[in-house]
Image 1 (cartoon, rainbow, N blue to C red):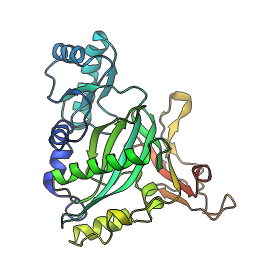
Image 2 (cartoon, rainbow, N blue to C red; image 1 turned 90 degrees about the vertical axis):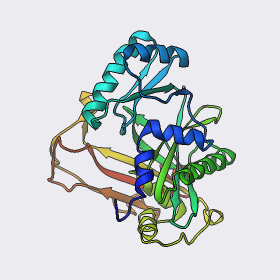
Image 3 (cartoon, rainbow, N blue to C red; image 1 turned 60 degrees about the vertical axis):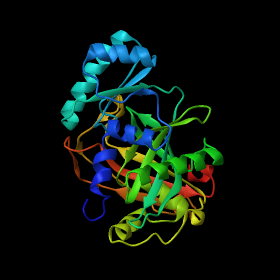
Image 4 (cartoon, rainbow, N blue to C red; image 1 turned 45 degrees about the horizontal axis):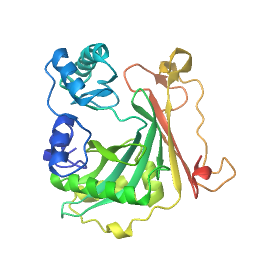
Length: 307
């Protein structure tokens, strides 16, 4: 983290969902209506949920990867959901703080990629659509989004930069938003790191995010401005999991008997096919790691070509 990561202030403040939401409010970033303090117990959870209005999302302040999250639709579900979210958060993160916010129906999960250097320059590199999820974990990610329009993209980008500036952020980072069916958008969280889905942004912008992180960490100024960023083509990332579809897609373990990665011209096209792999044929898949074993990234001039 000391080599390619952002400063300590930003990591601490934006890594905590309750704290980051308060910072977002102060930076005039749109936030989901809710309760931004740690909920004491089930009784208080029910009262807060009733005040917000069901459906409500209960979320772990220290959460990530879909852990410590429960959507509740009534008082009974709220009591059970609070206990489950708190227990899961404690087991996963050693932190049982839970907060609540309005659950947005028909949501799109859109995130803005940013770069910020040590000289006060910050830009956004378009968006990624990450709405195809299972158990609150992303499965398919693409850039650009097939849903939002240019006006929404620009407004989200400006708010993402405002949030980064509010915490003097440095390095690559992602500001995540929930967007409703009418393209109203609300801050979800900020990831102060490189994300799994970063290759789709690299493909449509032509910018190597890891290279930029290293340059920023060494004190270099960004050598491009917001006006230089142009999105070209379409890119889609598919996460490849070691899971058992006959058991509700639970993680699967054992020997990886067969594993074949495609080459870039496998489909009779010169469009790029990229594999970010973490395994080889014959490897043992264990229970000690996330079931994500590789990523398939494709791109083309259109969304149809990328698919």
